[in-house]
Length: 499
Image (tube, rainbow, N blue to C red; front, side):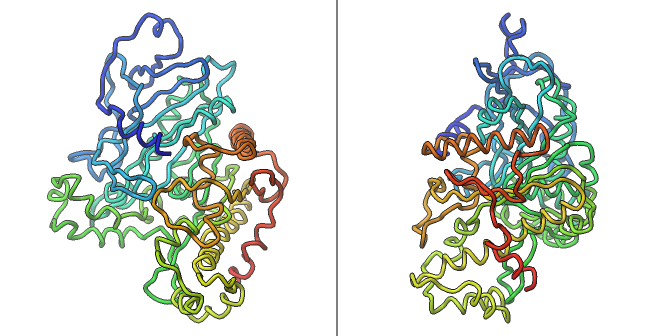
């Protein structure tokens, strides 16, 4: 992870036109003509990569807080040998350096070397990061591309205050980042063939906020025809979290547009949009985390995605929905940085679940290690993540083929720096499946490498056919232990459904 972060953060982000040697012009695959102009990438014996390709006009100045605008065509050949920049963001978990780059609507393309006999499937990756951080360039997609003979596109989208800000009367309020993702998917439709891809066989996939973004695209009428398959990793539509404002109250991520617009009034002391558009990026980053919820009641998301999924107002495409076995271990020490004595466990459950605290305590008793954070992590993993994924599979499965997985390898190196020891270990923490799909520079054991190969093949098979290759409703994925998971019982989904 550190290697990739260093490479991204030290890459030259300036735009440039390059002179193309005769070899490139002769057809070695280094130069590709897009609908807006030619780009020159990097070619090796096994893969090609193209970075920093614009899919929308810079969202700066008057374009700040507007839906993405078309890119102006360019002359000559654009340098595509550097990765796309990081969108403006603050330092965050796993990402020690932020960015003040507002001009960031670029994508990266990775393909196998050589021309295909027929167009390849295309996989479009939407990164995670709580809708406030992350970048498409953090994900080295060479494994997925070369082992599966597919084209992989990793994209950026506006984050935080730049992507989900709302203001009364502002068209598109609260959903600019979701609109950016659709602009990238439209770029793929126009340009997939130029990179050897099949625009009729596009799989959109993402993890965490990226998985929630896939949910948003599944429920957005404007995304019709932009993809043929979908993979939601640790980001089901119905993901919720404690409100911490009243016992028993849990809230979904999505917000009504009116709430987001109301929240935008008076931001950084401005009385109107002209003032806000004149503010420097650094000033707006002081309120960045306050705008991390995509809005519905918008043109992009007409209704709450939770309601859309429940009522079948979704695109009926093959979908894979999965999660990790221990999602909340990554976040629990951020909420409770100090050990929670078991004598205080009930008090914490009352704050979370109100009058249902006794029922939860009976289902999830303490284990005697005198730190109740592992119990709290399991409770919230099951309630907020696992069973929301279970519900997503059931509801989406009424209309299209749905596959499931659970990443359950408990020995993945913790690649988020600075986290303290956790009782019982972090296990299969949130995002722990990512180094098995993308090269993060981590050292995997032979058993984990075998699991990585299995998962990469399954993701590729799904992209090609809509079937990952297993018969189980939910396949458990762990080194040396791949097989059916008793998912609903393991995560007490019957209990949570009744509660």
